[in-house]
Structures are given as structure tokens and as C-alpha cells.
Length: 152
View: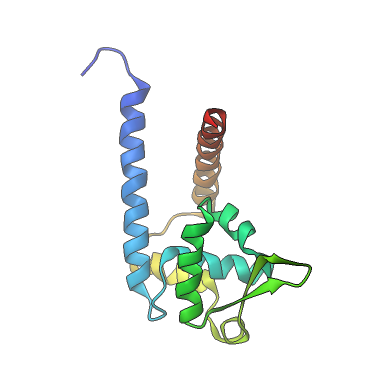
């Protein structure tokens, strides 16, 4: 090990840890519930419950994924009867998405689903911990996005 601390060594370990957390969340969260939803689908339901009907481009931007990737996710959600997609009457090129009435009325609160997931994993962290971690990760996200945009 080098005499001086080298941030890139810690950064590599940090990125590996983030990757493993993401992989675990996607796999475990999807298998945790009878709703047969992946993590992105669950997040989409949460976002749509709070935003109502939105353009698919807004949802794509929220997730930071290409529209083509989102289309596949929305196809699965529509097939499972969670959402409805329509064309914007003001601009037929624009696709709108919203939760269907069945999902709005009967789907458990996403907070309850996450609470149960955390309980099942025996994860008991304080609100302050979640807030602080989110704040730090958003700083990193912002730096990474700025770097991506400078390459364009």
C-alpha cells in the first residue's frame, strides 16, 4: 500500500460498493413483493403517484435513462396493468403516462413497500442517516453529470 493516501483507491472501492448495492436492490427488491415489480418500476409508481400524468420524457429524465430503455419498462408496466399511456392532444408526438385507476386505488403506498423491504433486510437506519447519505450522493451525482456534459 502506498505511503500516502490516494483518493482514487478509495473511489474505486466506493464505486464497486455502489454497484453492488444497486445490483442487490434491483434483485432483492424485485423478488421481495407479490407485485412482481422491479426497483425501477416501483420508483416509477412512486413518482407517478406524486406527479400524476406526465410526459414520458420527464420520467426518462428523472431516472437518467434513455427513452428507449424507459419504453421497455413502460411496456412491462402496461402489460401488468399498472399504467396507461396516451398521446398528448396538443402534440401527438408526445406520449403521456399515468397510473391507471386500479393502481391508484389499490396499490400499497410505496413508503409501506420500502418500509417492509428494510424491515425484511433488518436495515434500521435513522432519517438523518438517509438524509445525509442522499445529500452526499447527490453531490457526487452532480459532479458526474457535469463531467458527462463537458464531454458532449
